[in-house]
Length: 194
Image (cartoon, one colour):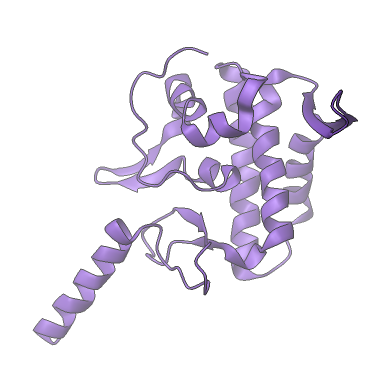
């Protein structure tokens, strides 16, 4: 895999892979940003620690096919996340879009030479690798704790997170960013009586 053209510019990284894919869109100081608007952005995302942890030896190709498949899957995940946030069922077309990504791979389980179980991802096309892994990760998140998949409480923020706090009360994508801004706004409002 080629080296990325620079560091990952996103304000929130390290979320589960499905949400990390959603967080390739964010609002920067200069307006909306999209890391996946180009193949160089794709290279940055594929080289991020979160993605490399999941893809391992799959080494997905950096190219238009991989990018297009990721964008399709991201659209499905955006719709699924919006439905989950509203606690409504997703549209059948949205589920079909995610299932399309999932149809291009599978986990093959075998008994290894040491007598222990082994698992390997098999794909019909390596370009589907990152999209398939993100879709598979979504299934794990909704099977485990779907109520912990959340958008940032800042109405101008488009980032998502998986709340792993003990009491499940996380509200912000990050306390350093949106959480701090909310505190500052509340403080200003109290001081000015606004």
